[in-house]
Length: 316
Image (cartoon, rainbow, N blue to C red; front, side, top):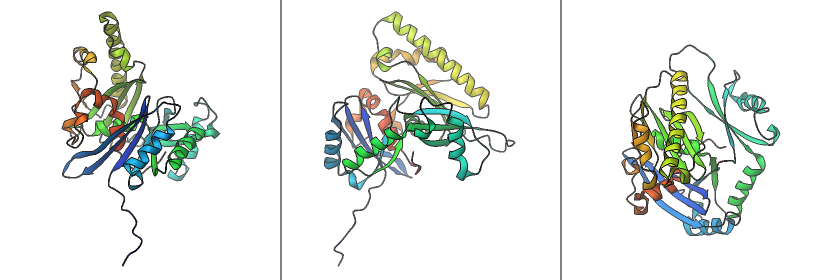
């Protein structure tokens, strides 16, 4: 007879994301023969300065000790920088990257937690320098986030960034042998990514918030659409020059409410790639979370969904 039985860890990841008005939690499982399935979604209202009680309530009610949990850093909590990959052995990579970042960060490099994301080069191409993304966050912030989860008794296995969360969603839409650009908006601004073969090749922030995108004044909305279009044209042209071996299939717009609906038509008439609106039900099984069928909910929890699609083991 076994008196001590360790609880089995539930498959998949639970993403716990701090929003401006509370904490969202989403659990997704993956199956080789079916769409990734959203098993659970929850939201706990909280003031930004007093989230710990809500986090502890979440942990207790969702029994988070049974899950692999990840959290997302917010805009302004990290820097994502493109750097040339140093020609050093793998075990010396982070040290070399740290040296390269010492004059690029807005804080001292000794105070930084650093991770790297490789940008693959063209297969069978001659060996040459290639780019990497370096992610840097203040040690104090990372330690504070880890401490919050320890105090709430939540097993935090990873800390991720929005660019990688969006990469996870974009990868679900990639046609064979072609890349996908994705553009989403939230209260912090716009986020453009380009993925190919499940890898992140381009990430750009746009200084346009969801509120600006949704304004009712026609002239101001037209000006916002112009700004977005110009930024996309520049970014996609740069991508074509740098990664000519990746044909772009389309630009996919993340979910947003109807007040911003005119953006798709505007971009479609001004860009050279097809422009589509993301249909989350085409790539995710939402049968257990009917509230996620609304566009507002999909926009609100978009990055939390992407974070819950995590499948790498690497930790920031």
